[in-house]
Picture 1 (tube, helix red, strand yellow):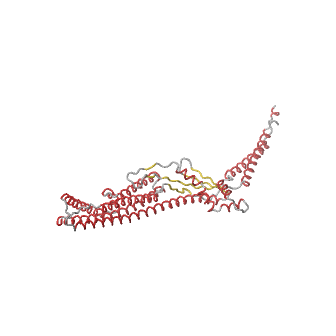
Picture 2 (cartoon, helix red, strand yellow):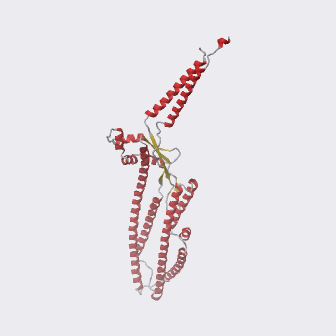
Picture 3 (tube, rainbow, N blue to C red):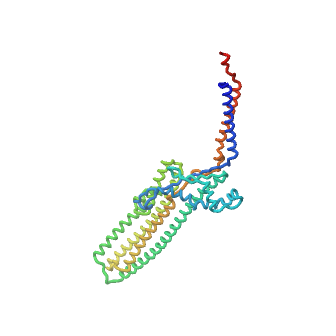
Length: 435
């Protein structure tokens, strides 16, 4: 009986069937007893752009990206600045109080502690992607909280940038308008003084012009005539071109600083679009964003070029007026020999004030343009790669693993029963009869 195979097989079958049955029962109890827990995830991609030291300078260089920029955004999303509005917007203190505290509203600290237990916000390794993961027994709640964190963060950054940029732009615009008005007044004063001096000189028969002064005046007339013809031909040529050709030839044919600076921005935007298409694909969000930025800059370039053309019309008219005035002065100098040079302290001071105000106004315009470009091209932006959706299956209990265990235990139990039946069907050893 000690080496009876019937007994050994039957005993092994019993153990096997018992083990399989216990495994199936344990897995079933795990499914029934373990509370269901769901989890939802959303990913935020933080985009850091190369920033130029001077957006409107043709000699500007790009500064390297700040390695702390993305970790700084991670700290912001984890901070109370973002999370407190999320808890308030979703009324989590009331909702969780009904669920966990018999209807009593949770305190701020209790809500915050529970919120941190349910939420994890981490930066994925070697990437600029921040993953927001929420765990809860309510599947709808997981997706709602994850998406609300993402929304509040993006709205916070957008509002912050809008308020800051609008305030700077409005302040600079008011300063520029005030300087422009002061400049107009200063120019009017200089013109008035000049007119008074010239009138006084033209009616003074004692004052005569010296030969060198007459030669300088004649040279000025020749220079003005040459300048007028040159400006007239250039203006006619530029007016014959469309905007696409103007953007190409205008910076090479004129010395307009604003146009040159704007075309430098357009070139930088075109390079960024090419880079985005090459590295992310023509249909990527990066390429679309770069294309939108390029289109906006082209519109601004066209507007600036139109303004520059209008300015050239005014410059041509101013040159013509100056030429006519010089010719008139030459005629009167020859006929009356009146002195036409101006050496008046008040007039010289007025001219110096005009030059100073023009420089200050141009500097303010450059600052204003920089802020407007910064509003179009923010240094940090974010994109929701995948919004959270309510999960259909819980992460706990692990239903697939439990079902596999139940079926595995059932299979083992069947094998054990088969071995028991097989053991009972085996014949006992007949070694004694052989002897």
